[in-house]
Length: 217
Image (tube, rainbow, N blue to C red):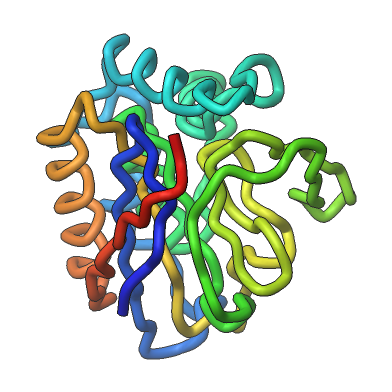
């Protein structure tokens, strides 16, 4: 499988799919995984100010402002973890949150069955919005690099669309790691750790080629 991505000078996107043996609602997280949701837990990757700056610069390139409620998901997770508000959900989301928390790289985990082909990654058009939570709140994703499916943009490094999020019945997920070109080795290590966590939890994954296509800046 390939994922077409509009050329972007700062984004180093990584993607993979993962299959579950049973619906996600019947897969509790093991203790060793939930322990990684603490900001001081030992981890093979480490967030840094350099990573934080590079991520924000990547998001700003096409005019998006990554501040306030629109900050990168990795920064939101750090704040939640430091305040003791980052709880367990399921092994796939917990692995996603642990890797994003410790690496400083935003990541998305989506229910693959809810996505309409074809898929592509490109900045959203100005003024485009979507609902990102069950309360019906919306985010303006104009200028933000997003995963698009046949219904429109549905995931990015800030907030994913509610319509594409995992649920109790999820059996296959699509994961996106929103990496940055300034930190290639760090992105490689974070991706490897993410897939290793899932494998330890009994969830196999398969990496997807992110095929860069010309057309961006």
